[in-house]
Length: 619
Image (cartoon, rainbow, N blue to C red; front, top):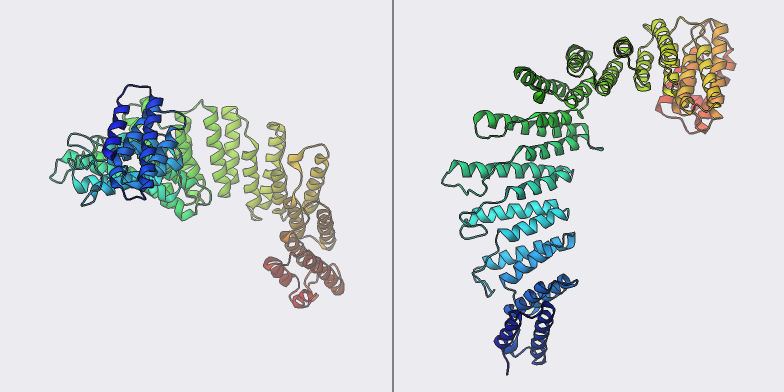
């Protein structure tokens, strides 16, 4: 009867018959099916007709040549069937690796990777069981599989497979495995994996991207050095774009939401370490790649996310000055001009400092002047510059410096500062405290007039609220509570005219109550302030947001400052001792009922009622 060899001979004849591919595929599929049926009918005892690896490979090649719509699925089914009856040969593995890799989805990529590893393990075994032991998996199969893993978004698996490939070559030698003596690994392959890892935007992947970059560099240097241990696997060193991929990945991690301050700094330091290694390698002549402006910008970008770190400010300015020095030494060549993005990110970094000296040394004395020199007519750049500088000075409670920049925008550059600039100045005046309260309150009112009349801007809620807070800092103004309440009433009025940006919030109401609590006038003035505090409190309770813990804290301070202590020792008490206790008791009861009795409120109760606060809390 017919044997496996006979069936394979007929199948091979059909494959080389020159008939159309559909006919060949059907014929050889049928021949394989006939072999399997005969073998199964013999209960698996007749090895003479058992299909072998060649039987299945001939069908695989026939299906591959036909390439119809369902070809890839039938190829996979046939290959799986081969695994049931025999061990597929290397050529069958190679066919399947390339076919599955061409699909491009995650499932097929993982299958291709699995087959690649199976094939390598089979060929490396001491007694290979495949019939074509002289055929080995080569670089093309690894390339196809790695590219497929990258395209499918499986960056870490692509990296694992590339690393495994290099490990095998180093272990077994070039002539024996994967790449021939005169063949080099593709630098594009390394770059594609680095890019895929970098784009994952997670810590582990970016670290692997950096390690692969280092490994690539090492392999290249080994080849250049010509040492006895040299593999010469790759003939091109990583270019600038590869370094930038990793640097920008660290920058993105430094800016990523949910990343803590320590991790942000670590990411920036990792980016900086790559830069410093590049500079060192280039200086020693071991690399032809010199950091360019994009490299420096990526590192500064990473540092710009590390808020309030002294080392970050210093290092960022070192980088900026280095770039600027190159520009100056090259005769102000436009190509070497420090980019505005670099300067603005450095400014943003310094603006986040809580150290006024940082703002003076780096911002006022250098960055502002340099940006104005390099980009005098770029209004968009200048606007960003002024916004950052105003933010920085406001954060350091230097409102006068911030306001001077607003005037510079208006008078020198004919620019109109936006609401953000004014908001930051008002915040600074509000935080300036009562030491210069009278002056700050007046300057705040003058700035408000400039904003409304000079710049024709519509004030926001934050501006109104901070004006109220600034007014509260003026202890010499006996009418400050009336002024604060008047602003609140005005805000309520303009809301009716659809100025939603000016609508009061809970912060506005709390600010007015705080102003009332800070009144230091005579008994009559304190009584009016107390009444006003409770009036605003009741108005707040009628709003959609209602009071919060800060409201009750402010109200209790008003009681302590305006009514007096609960022991009646204050000669300027405006109410009787009993009435005082009633006011405190009612306030505390309401606070407890509404669920705002927290640590902050309890501390204020202790101040307002040092002798009876425990009694009040029992209610």
